[in-house]
Amino acid sequence: MPRTRSLFSHVDWFLFATALAISLLGLVTMYSFSAGNSFFDRQIIWICISIVVFFAASIPEYGFLRRTSVIAGFFALAMVLLALIFFFGSIVKGAQNRFDLGFFAVQPSDPAKLLLVMILAKYFARRHIEIAHIRHILVSGAYALALFVLVFFQPDFGSAIIIGAIWLGMVLVAGISWKHLVVLFVTGAIVITGLWQYGLQPYQKQRVLTFLHPLTDIRGAGYNAYQSTVAVGSGELLGKGIGYGTQSKLQFLPEYQTDFIFAAYAEEWGFVGVVLLLGLFAVLIIRILTIAGRGADNFDMLFGLGLAVYFTAQFSVHVGMNMGLLPITGTTLPFMSYGGSHLLTEYAALGILCALRRHARPSIQARDETEIVGAL
Image 1: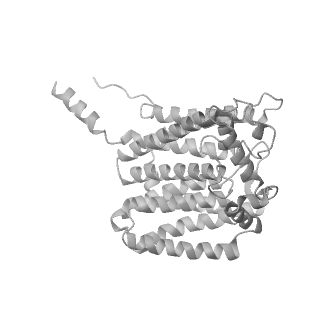
Image 2: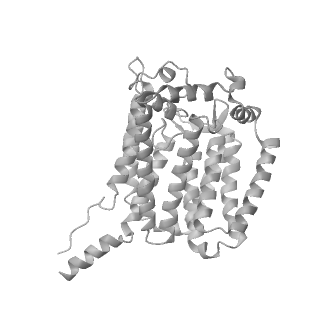
Image 3: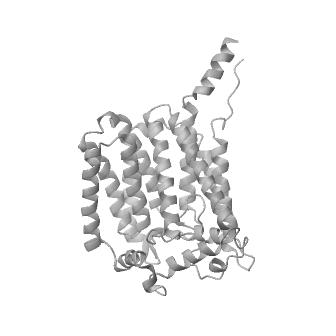
């Protein structure tokens, strides 16, 4: 008699546990033994809501994502929301990139990254054989460019970089030719030159210049980068202990709960803690790639690969920024930084991936075991 599948039997519990562990590491990094743990308290609420979102997102069937009309509708909605930011968005630290709804703020650029993964998975799923044609690279690039421009001029340079990385990563996994790749990089160099001359704000140019010469303006534009590297280095082998990070808790390191949470974590947990965090992220990406490799069709596989690119790019940019290897761009660390918009998006993405796993092809080992049991 066949067994009845439970509502969440398709959920990859190892994947969920790994993401939750990273979130809990971020939560304890926000903890302080001094009075006023507002970030810690509110992050508990966001994590709980994100868990609910994860399981809710893992329930539906997502066959509708393969319909052009649905994807086009989502894309149009994202474009409208990103455009409305310029009229109704609140300005925080020079960036107009969120809607302030009172109790919480919504940052449309976060779900826009997930939407781009869906759009490109849908586009390349039907055209992966024809990817050698330059027109498919240009069309897919147009989708990414539209989102990139709206996010870039908010200005949210960090999210714009992630959007560009998602497109480039998914084009590569879809099978771009080396000839087109060279053309792509040359075009990119021209675009970057144009942005430097006419697109970047003065403070953004200063961040890049400070990256090249970080010690020239420690008390000015290079302050954040300098304090971040000090925090990372001061953690040494075992760290200063949870809640005892002097750079972060004494406010020498700004935005330690969001843009510089890796530096704050490294200060309190040390090298051993950093190895633990890197290991958890490696497991997360490996599980995503494993699910993608067993996707039922091209869309499922490309969606999983796109998520791996998305999280890897955001993790790499954040850590590189915190360690002084990349310019300061203001990018959160997936599943770890404080905030609701990015957490809800990331857990929803994993929930959708688990829902697609419902129809995944079995692994070779599982298929062999099934055949043996059937023979018996």
